[in-house]
Image (cartoon, one colour):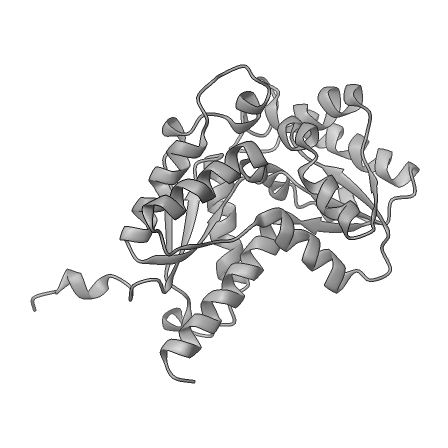
Length: 266
């Protein structure tokens, strides 16, 4: 039997596209969450998803925002989005919260417009804050656990304050010495120990959760995709957790299903 591989390509603009590699496990986690949030009972009912993970091409977002390097990762991300669109993706998400910081995200949007791209690029922080508003109506004091890049740009803080939330963030020393190191410590951070979350990272994560509990926080946004890899209920009991990766996955599935229904005339 001859296989027509051209027929295996999804209909134009009907696939979900993931910009991975920021880091590699974060892209994989978003893919996994898309599958878990799809209301499918058979393999064939699942949505087409295209994940491109080129970690060596995309410079670290926090390092760029800190001014340590001049190369804006936006341009490499644009290259990945172009590949995703060419492969059939119409809804795209970046598996990295920091990449939505204005200095990166605005360039991506501008360049995609110049290129005539038709992809819908979902905004992870906005989708996360909308999920918070819709599903946690009693929460008013919101804690933020993010990378230094997202912390310094105030990405989530501005969105939340515009929605009239009280935002709880640690001081710069706690942010840099505890929260950022959970992900970025070169010896025991999540990025350095991707086969297993280190005991040191778990201990630091507990300290971060304790900080927010001590400050009467109603809910915590996990605003760095690597935090999604820490799933121990024991570490996060007693406080509501809003996982940005999960929020983006749900938004992507919702939009993709809507497009599928339109395409099928339902």
